[in-house]
Each structure stands twice: as structure tokens, then as C-alpha cells.
Image 1: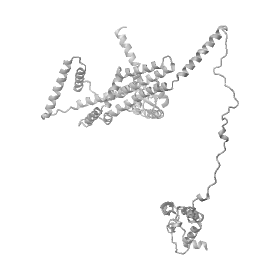
Image 2: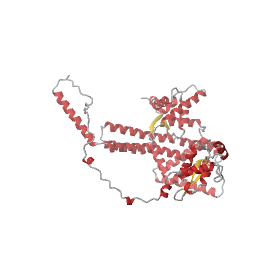
Image 3: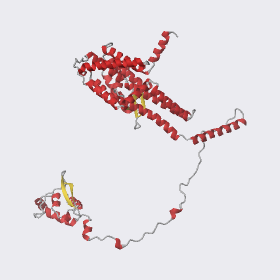
Length: 497
């Protein structure tokens, strides 16, 4: 194969990746816009029904704006189509609900569009300085010559010491230009925006491993120990031999170091408070930089959750695997094979025998559900009569104190209250109740008054009034009862006449 043919094959392979198939379609701007509006930059999982509704709402808004290249179909149909294109993945969250999330291919497409939408210079002092610094640091950490490493470190120490001494001596502080800050923020945002897709690739790789492990267990063509050893080897290789795995381990090590996390937060805060940052960064960019640590933590949590699902799959298989049942099934199959060979030896090549797919059911009219228990026929122990002397002694007054309302006495008090005499002037049942002696102010007497008032057809109001009740033991308690006004004595007298 010629060089140009090989290059063409590599380019065709790149265009076959889901990332470029998403960007290469005519409706790519609308699809990318919906993904960015629904998932944001954190790729937070969305419940399936909610995403279906959001897709339909976004498409309706896009059609109203005059766009013609709009995907057709319901939100459910489009999400299934995007799953087949490997841009969406459906899984279960911790609560067992189905959710959608973007694949690493879709996140790469979103990152590419985001980078192209930013204004960035093709060549700048900041970029050259970044390249020189990266090469220098890379060489200092990878150079196999001990003397060369020491020389590089000494030069760096001397440079930093000279700069520190210059600033301590009061020399002029050279401020960064606006172009330098713009290029720095652009490169920093580009690095941060690549993190979600990196985490998603590790998460998808663990999901693939889990699917392959389940398939290997179901196939039962290898011992379970070999499957588990293979998983451990692949998990270790994923963490150490791939770029995404090494990035995950580095991020995990960063979050384990509280000093590094604190330093990262302080550096980001200092950059956001720079005088030139207000003219360079928008609200979205500032929020993205401010949420860098949370972004890394969320990505790590999703990867660890996916790895925990793989481990749970292994644990569930090991715990639930029944070796005895497998041996019984193997013995049964061997017995069936032996009987089949015996039958084949006594029949012709075209002989047939009808074998039911499932064994016939055993017809039983009735199965005894409970058997005789002699303990059921044992008589219970006799109840001994109670001694009359053991009963507590109660007086008539104590019994009446625990009894119901004294309707006769309450009725007389009500009649006196609505009569023309001024012995018990009161405007409502609550005022009448407060004027009674303690023996008639028990909580149960409130029900007696309300009962008598209802018999007379007196209506209650929306307002409430307090009833200060006195229990038989002397304790007090106040109840809020709808206010029932007493009728006017003059009107009552005229009506009675």
C-alpha cells in the first residue's frame, strides 16, 4: 500500500468515529445546540422522560427561529436514534431510575465546537513560553543523565532566585498584557473543557469491561477464576497503560492531596480576581473556571461508581454461583447424552421420537397444607376468679370526676345565662365556661356545652376563643374552640313570649 493510500485509510477511519459522524451531518448544529442546552458542561445525567420533553421543547423553539435543518420525530425517537449513533448512553442511577448521559464521542464534539467558537490567536508570546516551559519541565523529569537533570534544576533555581531577589529589592513589577492574559485563559479553558470527555472514556471503558464480564459468565466457557483474573489484569492495564487511565489516576492523586486542591483553588481565585479578567472572561467562562474542582470530583465519582458496578457484578456472581447445581446439571446432561446414544444404537437414521419441550405437569386434586398437631387439642388453662379485695376502692366523687359531662348542671347554667337575670352575664360559651366553678370546668364539660348549644341551634363563628379547663387532679389546660355567642336576653324573652 502506498503512503497516500495508507493516509487515506487512516482519515476514513477517523471520519468513521462517532465524533466526526456527529459533526459531519447537516443537522449537526441543532443536535450540538440541544446537547449543550440540556447537559451543560458537567454532563449531569438526565432522567429519560425529562430529556424527551426537553428535546421536543428545544426543537419547537428552533423551528420558531426559522431553522429548516431540524431533526424529525418525537423526543423518544430522537434519543433512541442518538443512542444508535453512540452519542447518548442510557443507564441506571443510584436510585434505579433510567437516565441519559453524553458519551465521550459527543463530549469531544462539543469540546471541538466550543474551542472553534472561542477567539484565539494562532501564535503568541504566551504559547511559545508555554511550549518552552513544558519542554523544559518534561526534559528535567525524563532526562536519563543525572548531571543534565542537576544542571537544569540549578538553572531553574538560579532563575527563580534572581526573580525573587529583584522583586524583594523593589524592582518594577512587570504586568501581564491583555493579549497574554487572553491567550492564557483560552488555553486554560481548553484544558478544563477536555476533562469531562476524558472521564467519560474511562467510565465507558469500565462499562464495556462489565458487559464483557457478564457475557463471559453467561457463556461459562471459562472457569470463573480465569474471568476474575482477566478483569483484574484489564482494570490494572486501564489505569496504567492508557492515557485516560493515567489521567484518572493523576486526578485521583490530586484530590487526595488537600494541599494541592487548596493551591488550585487559590490560584484560580487569584486569576479570576485579576484586573484584566473582567474584560476577558464572560460569566460562563468564570463559572467554568470556578467549578474546576467540582468538575473533577464529579468525573471521579462517576468513574468510581462505574468501577463499583463491575466489582458488584463479580461479587454477585461469586456469592450466588452454586457449584453443586452446576454439577447436577452436568450429570443430567451426560445422562441424557448416554440415553440418546443408546437409543441411536437400536434405531435407524431416520427414526423420530417426540420429546416434549417441558415435562408434563403432575395433576393433584388437593395437597394437604396443614398436618395434625397434638398441641392444637390441648385445653387452655382455667381462668381463676379474681379476688374482690384486690379491686381498687373509689369514691363517688372520684368516679364522677372521671365521668362524662354533667349535662343537668350545665343546662341550668345555660338557662340562667340567657335569662333576664344578671347573675351570670356572659357573651359567649367561652366566657360562660370561664365563670363556672372548677368542678364544671373539666375538659369534658366543653363537649357538654357544645352539645347543649347545638341542641338550641346556636351557630358558631369563624373566630376561636380560649376555654381554660381544670382537670380533676388540679392541672390546667387551655383549648381553642370556635366562638359560640349567646343569644341576646331581650330577644330571647320576646321569642319565649
